[in-house]
Image (cartoon, rainbow, N blue to C red; front, side, top):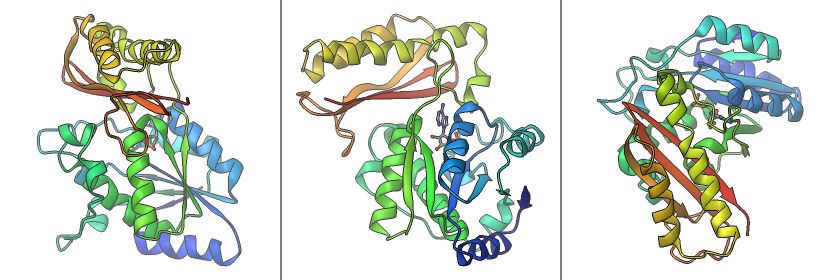
Length: 282
Ligand code: AMP
């Protein structure tokens, strides 16, 4: 595994692979790697000649009061896991090389960024779109892999790639879960034992909502009420940011459920914000 830190050198190295006719599979991450990240990497390995993983805790996507400084980092352990997966290139850029003092460009994807998570983390998706555009230009991937756990992020990246003609296939991969259904997340380490137990309510709520729609309920309002009731029944939930049913393409709330829908939740447990979603094909 090659470890590269300098964008220009990484760009040259990736271009050389492309010139030799090799496909490049790219998995962008913020590190603290878990089995969810590894599932993306395994998929990228299956479908490409060369696999590149980036680890970069992108300051642009964190608000001033958010957890940038204490975001979990364990680079030694990450490198060990990546060697085990036998990836080709780890891109580990330095913050100053990604964002020199003169840096001033940003990418706004529009309305999709204002919905769900965007309402509660203003500027978050501008930061995500900007860093992903930079990474795409550095890596020039054939395919890039994103988790369905961050469904909104995947929709926004697909839109950005389409609008700006990035020549890359965006591939959405299923959410990896713990044995009790909790979606794997680097932020789960923030939870103490009781909070960890309480966090299962997210998946429980999503499954119940999906089962209820499958049993014939089509009212978005009823499903929203049901989801909020289930989450509120867990005393350790400090607040619900959203819990609702959405159109998976526009990310708008659905009032009458007729076609495929996305159930999505974001809650706070202590100071930790957790998100999850499931998709129902009708
Ligand atoms: P992050 O390091 O949290 O920015 O995540 C990097 C990538 O891994 C994103 O595309 C996430 O959607 C994806 N990811 C995070 N958690 C999971 C999970 N539990 N299952 C599958 N993919 C995930």
